[in-house]
Image (cartoon, rainbow, N blue to C red):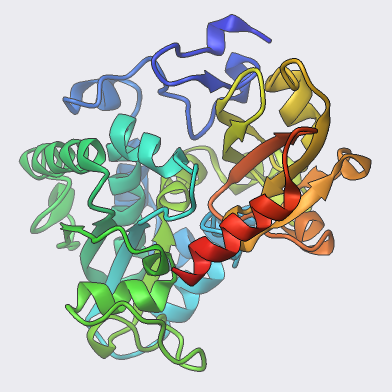
Length: 354
């Protein structure tokens, strides 16, 4: 492992500098001010979109990139945007899902804390693409540092003209409101999240009604999670073809995982999608301290357990689904041979029931 890519304040293992994408600013950028983000090319993608690209072309670029929602379901992001833009019923809204309710998942938390402007820039670009007038960032209440970082970032973005009326002298007028949630796991589901923002009980809505058609207050709404939004400036800045070079066919780009449990190097891991579990756990994570590997839980409490015989399984949306689990919020929990699998499963079921 290349220690130059290790942030001792947050345990971020990426392998090497060229592997950074979402975590490109880890240990390098100060989130307290907007200056570092601007000095590293921040908001250049927004300028490119507003000044040189039509809304339809922005959507097409995201479609061609193949970006899939990083919140767990893996739905193609660009297709979601195109559907919402095609619903002739303004106003349209945008929501950033920062709930991240899976136990031991903390990738979105880190992104909001350390690189909030990447999330804001992605949302503003999407607002231009689909014609949205207002955005909302929903952050679970216990994420106090993330909320503080986003609040500062929103204030700085408004002062610099990246939010508000006629952004960068364009026709786009758009602002974002930060909403603190109540730590409810169910709010990770987009219709329950929408209900919470509306001040209702956080319960999932009817699945035959899509938020892109009838979402927040009955209006067309795009809901994406934190990491999805942070990918958007990269795609617009460098192009869809460049983005699609990393990862696998059907699952392009990188993914940030929260590596926890019985492993030498717990922390955040950013790898190209389709990287094997063995590589993540043993090559990057350092293996199991003083014990033997037994299983790994992928996808949080609603995910599944992968045994040692499947350690060569590639971590991407389709491979995980074929193995009977899901990506979820990107949690990978390693278990050694002292772990009681019945007890682990009981904990997961009790968590979901509660």
